[in-house]
Length: 301
Image: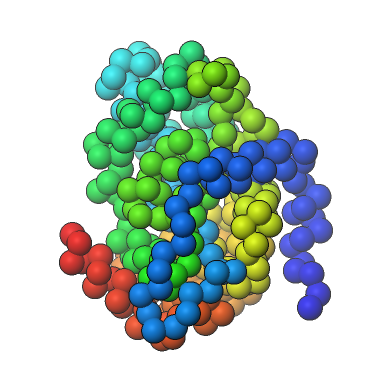
């Protein structure tokens, strides 16, 4: 089979820093990942298949880093002026529904300066509290059900996000997922230095992280699935055999339709196209698996 058309130009745009960021994120994810679950369907789990979910506006409404900033402000990590900037960025994100690299970079720079000198363990503890305060009720039930269907099929499921890997890991753990790929902030002796390892896990860097994790875990990317709302994640979506556009921005919607990718929009309840779990992933009935996950989610709520 010929290489996908995206590979040459997008891989060329993957700089040494994005490759470093991807590899560092994959290493961090493997250290904190859970083992693959036992399959709940009467078919064998496919241990060479996995699912990768973008976080912001795909799994969760809004941006994780902004909610994290709100929690840090509440704990007096920074002043009102910085909070106003976080609030404006979050408002813009919610209205536009897409990631703006300049806004996201500004938010990450702010977060790095705020956590510099703090211990990783301290921020992990605070992150658990912030999840309960600001994030738990912003999870999209539909996307959560899709992730659960993969887990019920005995597959591993990772979040892939530009948010700090510690924050992403907390969210993944709370949702019962395998683990998370996220931006890795440098730390020395358990203390943040205020620098990144490589660059933020955004765009091509996400694809590099998925590629590195797949190689380390023995995954067959042609059997894997990926989900995202943003055209910035086209490199990651194009890397797998089963790409899905969830709550897509305009550019991703056009791109997905041109390539007959499956779509779903949870923002309006409108079903853009039927989304099931790929047959190659080892699930017997696609719709049945998703329905079972939805029912399970409702019972838990």
